[in-house]
Image (cartoon, rainbow, N blue to C red):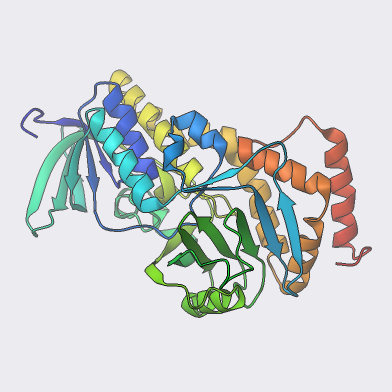
Length: 397
């Protein structure tokens, strides 16, 4: 802090969004601090698409597993195998190692790392911000900054304090247990190269449960927006059903996950949001790492533009660019979640649709490359008519 009386930016939150934003800003020579509350790991299946590795220069050694297929499980325990063709895979990361690597990269590029808890901020007459945070020893400190990026999660204090409507963010509550990967002899149903997704009302009445491989570990989790639903009980049932009840539990984590991007990400002056704080978790799938890092990069672009131009309208470009690139995907996934996850009868039909080869191919292509697939109109047409047949009950689930 001795070098900079007033920082160019403070990034609050050191997850994928905040660490990416800090790294981007530091690489441009700006004076940036990454303020993070250490010791907290978000519950996360840890799935990342190859496009993330390409877009953000992530080394392959951070992947603890390569999943080459998925198994979709219906309410009646029917299973649908979804292999990834042409050598494709879903990368799996452990968030404790992955997030720390991202924070270290930000520091290597010149960001100041500070451990502490954001408490409050106030606007100064010269257009800067005074930020108050609590250090690990309990001491309260203040610093001055020209801008701030709030990347402090779905319960973002930065957002609730500064962005209208942020306190209305709708969330799914997620919980998972990271366990020791079992000996195949003791859990023959477990496959370390496969992601299992359970669409069962007993596991989640409105979302899904998962069993995701993490090399020598496994993430077993569930999510729901129903506050009376026991996620711990759900995960216990899922572990029992999949032969993982006796595996050693290494850690337990829970947190809210947003359901929809906020209508506004900036305060029109000097603050912008990124990651879960902005609500950028994909509906239906709950995927957040790729979108968090994309949002972090766009927030850094917006802050850089604002610092150069002095025009606070530049901060609005983060949301505008994100929604232009990914808004349609979020809309489609949101519609899918609202309709197909409503009850077990619909979930049964949804899993049945996943047997279709066209559905599988387009699903994987869209996920792995992070775009809607428009180049195959005949496949889309076939899916449309099959979807309508399921909606009208013309085919058996």
